[in-house]
Length: 144
Image (cartoon, rainbow, N blue to C red; front, side):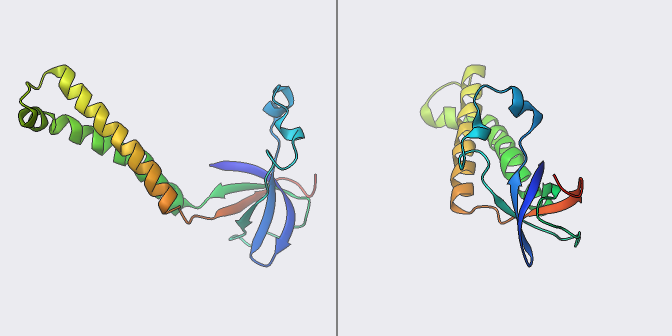
């Protein structure tokens, strides 16, 4: 994840940033940028590189690498492993149900395990949110 934002407040280690309206927003018909409070919600970021900042500066923000790695494992690796497990265990499941493990049944088990993993990932990320912090890594100009 990489975003641009405008620094609106600086409090010791925490910097409050307002998301930058992108070029695509200018041609969009939804007019999200005109709805105050709905689209441009400020969020906090850290300044690990100790870049000198002032309010009004345009900065580049990225997610913490550890948080991105954990998110990748949960979002990509876990569903893949569940899908493989669904395919591998499809013959045993068919045997328990008294069915023949046809290609269609194997595909059904694979999809069922994949959907189960999606529900599991959703539940885990809601119960235990990732603790990664946004980080300011670049300054684009002095001020907007």
